[in-house]
Structures are given as C-alpha cells and as structure tokens.
Length: 379
Image (cartoon, rainbow, N blue to C red; front, side, top):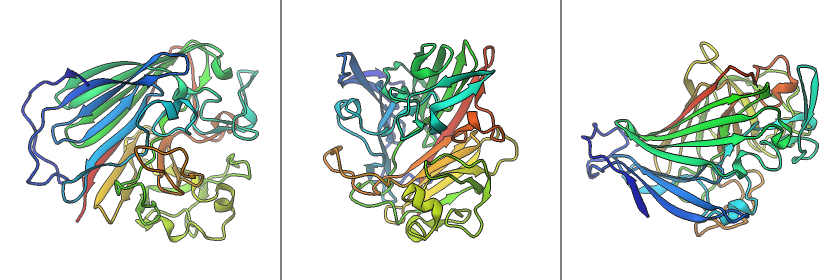
C-alpha cells in the first residue's frame, strides 16, 4: 500500500464516540491496487483514515465505498458496510454494494421518459423498468481519483464523464463526487454535475450498513428513526403511484425510533410489493435545499449510531430483502436481511411524475447535492 498524503497537523478534541484509550492518529490517504475491470483496466483502492482512526476504503470502480471501520461503545473498530475483498465480485455483477448510482438512482417506469417533447428509451433491467442507471450505470464505470487533505480530514475527489446517449440518456454529463472522512467522525459525500443537454439526474450512494460490525447478525433488531411524515407508495412493479401518503397509522411510520423488525411482516400491500421495506420517504424540511437529518439508525448491541443528513428531498430505506448469501464477501456470506440501505435521493420515476420535485438538469446549471453520515455511540 502506497501512502499518498499524511500531513501532521494538530488534532481536534475527541467526539462523544471516542474513548479515553484512543491514541491520536495522523490523518492520511493510502493507495493500493484492487484488481482489474473485465477489459483489463487497473482498479485502485484508496484508504482514508481520520485522526481518530476511523477508516474508509473507496475504489475507483463504481466509486464504491468498500469498507468503513468505526468503533463500538468500547472503542473496538469493525467494518459497518458490506463489500468484497477485490473488484472481481463487483465486476461480475454484485448488486450495487457501496457504489455510486447514476445517472438516475432508483426506477424509471417502462424505461422511458419524455423531455422537451422528445421521448427517450432506457434499458429495462428491472422487469419493465429501468433501475439505477441501466445495464451499465455509474456503479459499473471506472472513475478517476484525486486524493486530498484539508484540516477537516482526508478525502478523495472522483470524476466520471458520461457520454451523450450513454444508457439512453441525453447530454454529456460530467460528474464529480467528493468523499471526505472528517475529523469530526463523519463521512461527507458531495455530488456535482453539469450537462451539455437537458437530462434527468439522481445520484446516491448504495452502501449496505450493518452497524453491529458482524454481518452474521440481521438488521431487524436495529432501531430506526426517519424524519418523514409521508412516503411515496408504489404499485406492483415498484413504481410510485404519484401519491404522497401519510405514514401515520402504517408500518412506514418511523417518526419515533422503532425496531426495524417490529412491523416488517405486517399484512400490508406495500410491504408485500417490496417483500419488506424498499420505499422512498418524503423528508420533512424547512425549505427544499436545507441540510436536515433524514434518518438515525442505532444498533443496541454495539452501541453504534449512524445519523444521516442530506440536502435531498427523499431517502430510500431498503432491508436487504433479496440477499441470499451469494457471493461471499470479506470472508463471510451476506444472508437475508444482513444489510440495509439509506439512499438519499430525489423521488423514483420523477421524470414521469410532474408533481414530484424536478430532477431535470439543463446546460448552464450545476447539479449539487450533499449527504453526511455521522458516527457516534450510545451506552
């Protein structure tokens, strides 16, 4: 592993998650090979370490968050995201573990949308619909990487240029995604994009979290709060109906911390369609671009807490409903519901839903989005 950066500036005070036994670390970025793409191009993985020893590994294939090590209530580090030890499983088609998703995260109905009077056809890779950018979305592309370091902590700026017409989308789209592992014990992800033609855009990170640090444990005992009083109900093909349905009185009410498994098997049409939770919540925000808390996830066993803040209007909560143990990752298997996602986003199928917040980016505009994952512990 090659050390790229490592400035020795003075540390800041430890946060509530740190314990007295921790020694101060020198934040740095290290680079190492991680395998090759199917066409033989080299893939690199960058390890970011903040001054408290929290560690994030990000590879250039898919801009993927491969691992994320945070401490439990006793200060013991463990990996809290699912992933793999080389690029090979990702190249062979593992579904989106830790990847950057684009051009359009989530589903577009019938793989089709009309923009400025012209209809565009996308690949149908999820039944009748297009999912997560099509057959070869941003998760299957090789990004260029530039490591950096500021007083806030080490980071990695990734860039990918999507050609006009790629996966059926109009316009040449230039996307930058900046990961920064901050010394306040948070992982910041900033998204920025410009286009040469009007195009839909919806970017997110698709990490599967297991806060216990042991992927043999399911996520059903975790406690979740979602800052939303509505969600977007779906039809049998997982496409939003266009309604904004109140969560009150439904299994989708997470306005107070609730055990994930408490209602996941309720006799509810929406849960039947998704085989569990796989839905978009409409976040409560003082204004559309506000950075607000979207969700707070707690693992009672380890004491780990994950708070998600975002400028996005929605969040997709998915409970690993199709995990089946294949392929093995990081020396173990990922069985049914051993990971969950909290994907900050615009709403699914927005190009076909005029009442939803617009996802159309036009030339001369700059798409910007910011999500922060904050790590702490509880007793």
